[in-house]
Length: 487
Image (cartoon, rainbow, N blue to C red; front, side, top):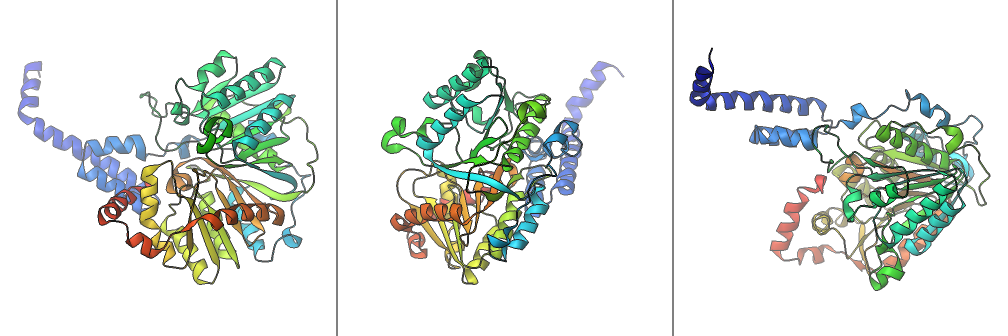
């Protein structure tokens, strides 16, 4: 068969060949989506996209729809380099009987089965408000580091705060301290030039999480991001919570436009849990093993008061919907009051049902969201969904002032959930997140005071107020809400 004949066949029958190709490619992609997606809505959506556009649809599915992490993420159970980071047999497991009401015992069991980290006593947790408290505390801890510094962040900007942090890390490196910095590949692009250039110039080992997941295209995923924020010093002190490294949270720089957030200084056994998450992510990204003796060669007693706590991992791997399931359990055991503060409040129908059921049981449910949001599309989608909780007696409050990025949940003044997770589909299903559950009436009281102070000055969202929004804006909000799983 000569070339001329092949060219003739291609010119005469290309529509038929294109049809066969589209059927083969589209059919293969549709079958893959139907067989691998556990959420029926996701499966229907992807199959619809593939079938409506048989060639473009499979390409989009290849880019954004296939979860390679679940197959490729290093299994901690098989990874021998992490065996030393496993929970030690000498740790004191927490007895919450004297701390929290009886209904929390079932929540503790749920945490055991979801987290695979033990709920350990002996932790000291200090709440830090905004960049004015958090960044100096982090830099001071870096300056005092003697053996190791592990830093992971979604955003690490090349601004005044980022450069101060880089300088402190460089000085630690010069003292002989082992330093590793892990930044998300998407988050690293929030500033130009990226901070990675400066860090590498200073000789600091830095890596980007999920830089080139497809192997043949120089692009990061929009989904499957590492949204975790953790700094671990010498394996015995950690900082974690919702704060990225950005000068917009520092009042000396941002002035009256300073954004708010909440972070936590942690000491005690839970630090080792946070460190093990970093070690796992670092090895997945760089293939480098971090020896336990170097990164956690010693421990020290945490200051008083000491409280039970544990880390909760979630992400599109073996811990998928970990936070989602923890919140379902927490809302189910609530008997008095649920307080939620979230910058992006877009829970799915299951979580909405849990909140609404709690409110119908007579539980006071307060939800605080920013009146000024930094993500306009997310704000539109949030507004389109608020009626679903308000009509079931949940109370929604628009906090006045500048944007607040805090992620805080408390139940009945005894249990708190803090960390990097937002209450939106991206955090609950698509991102790698890191949170803590804490059994402490003192910490819960601090968070409750913080939330209640905002409620006192906040504007209540009502059904009448939502109905008064012009139709064109309500329609816009509703259309954008349809895309909420990917905002």
